[in-house]
Image 1 (cartoon, rainbow, N blue to C red):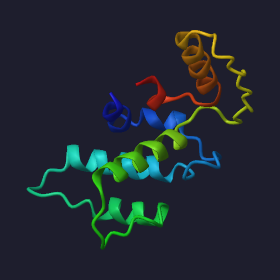
Image 2 (image 1 turned 90 degrees about the vertical axis):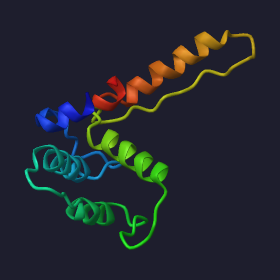
Image 3 (image 1 turned 135 degrees about the vertical axis):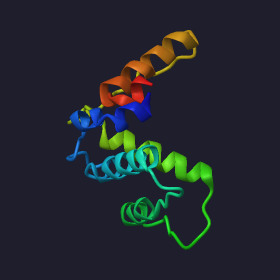
Length: 127
């Protein structure tokens, strides 16, 4: 489903270039470009060189000449895409209730989920 958003350019309607936690929409654009290149590439081989260069520009810790853990890359990519596509333009401060140890876990979990949704909405949250 995420791939479809990028292959059809639907993600562009959710770009949040002003999110201070995001990458100004640049990561989402780079990911969209690489997704379309991979799927619609007509040659025998595809080189992700431009995407790797974009990652290095957006994440200083990502050096294209070094080996990186796949988990780190996926985590960094998903978090960055989430912030670039977060529909909440101004994240409200969320006050958590004190837990006296008597509330059921389900209630606490639902409170945290609602608070999360007050600050985060978009394609990646919907998945």
